[in-house]
Image 1: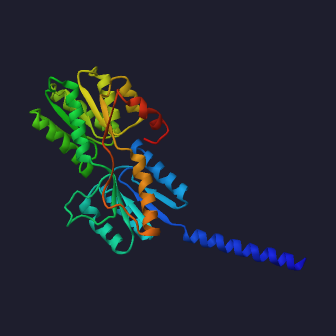
Image 2 (image 1 turned 60 degrees about the vertical axis):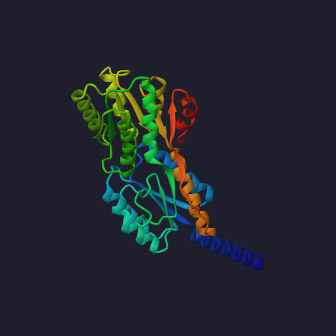
Image 3 (image 1 turned 120 degrees about the vertical axis):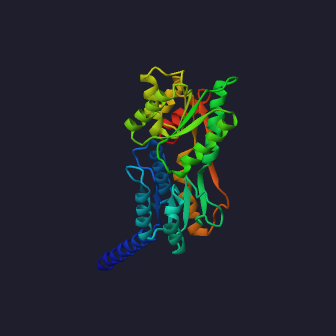
Length: 320
């Protein structure tokens, strides 16, 4: 009996030791973004990263500020690096501010994958991350502008305005550049308007612009945070149909607005993939040294009344 008891004790100790070793060997990754859970876009990215962590049995920690702040983004990157993870996923919304922290992280042996916004600088200057997963923001702008012009054809809108709810955000600026180039080539005046992640401030900014520029017929919003209050503004000011609105990314509010002809279209970028795929890539890199040698583009793609039903269910389930 004593021998049997001793055997059970030994087996128990071995199992405990094995479990401890497995826990210690469990890979850990950080996803550091300029967007927090208040933005429906980033909630889907978070879900993608969390799902990947569960599926591959790795620890995934998401860090994002309540309000857009480059300094907070840099601070969070430094916090993540200090934890010495097996990999770091990060949005390069300000390449200059993130340049040294990320280059130091890479030099210390932490592999980095960029998501949502890449480093737009030339190859010699660019942060040497392993891969980029996300949309081509310049093309997002191009596709948005072209789709808007289709809505007015064979005529053209008299004037356009582009809301930038996070001024200085490299990705939003690239989208605005694409829109501006298409409209300028078509001979249509278009301006950039600094708005805000705060719905009330965006409402007031766009209301003031439309009051001062009553010939504006095309409004572009670059994310749900400015699209939602703009839809409300057009409803309350009886401007639906008179001012045509185009958006970027998806939310249940935006899906409903497309179905009700309050939002002409939106440009999606399958953000679930931006959370899920980088974790998978970093696991493969840690295990086998494998990594794609080019960008993995998740967008752009136009969603309008012709195809909104296809994506509606996945938006409700938090996959798009």
